[in-house]
Length: 382
Image (cartoon, rainbow, N blue to C red; front, side, top):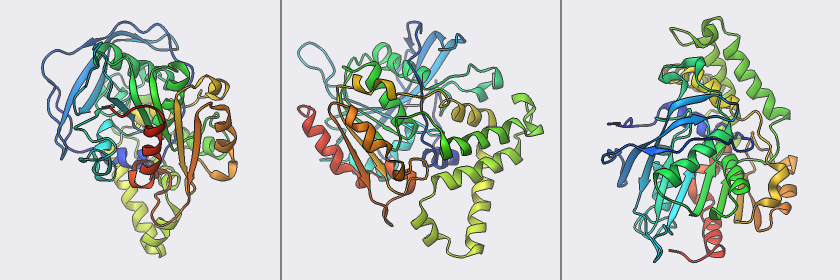
């Protein structure tokens, strides 16, 4: 029986606030899925949670590769509530960012605002589902043993697996709300285009809806090249982590995820900034698997949901923050593209000492009023 780690790795915190990644068209041909039997083990948390594993046998990836058994780890809070037809009516799924895991949504800045009694996602009323995506957390990933022989997944494959988890594993055929942060924000758009009737409301946080290009692609490619060109990587078959490559990755992630106002206040001297970078490098090298990171970043390379935005029919509120290095507001992309979404609304949170750069997506107090409005305009509250 699986037991999750008691606390998320440091990389999860760095990456979840550092990356906004994309996916492509949904993969076809995934085989029927199966659930692991037996009661799921509890997760160490302030909140009453359940954890489990979903096994999809013979999972076929978009590029034709396959795994005999794909494992998806997940956490749930609350209990499903059914209508007279037996259909679950109170399900919410929240999708994490690159390098993260479902457990990140148990942190106080998210959970204590939303899950509390009377909160917008009060778990006495809602059934909240927090999956670990392919290649992340306790789901199947390269570091489990296949290393660079692990299938090369993209966001389409990840959404296919999430759909199987819901429909075949948890027997959820409809979501009252779909949320996602960073990479999960991109997954939201793939979901909303591919399954336009699956969710009543969609709330993507911290992303854009165009292919990754320009500055955003430059730093991602630099990170991947740092790993691939490090002699210690050895084509993915290393016996020790390639430390130089991971230190470079830490540098890039620190810049991409930084909130300028907060960073200047926290590290106002050269000595403080240098010490902060040294800590980030040491923590990233200690906690990161190079293959896992390489696959996680590469998964976004073919993302482009822009041709299908008109297919989105759910009520949608899209939230970015003005101090986001990865999704800079001066590009004007979100304001332009949201006009193509029938029931779409875009909100840009102004930068301040209260925002957190790209990581603003997990600080629910910054956007909970928009979530409240989205739930109100998308149907009855269960």
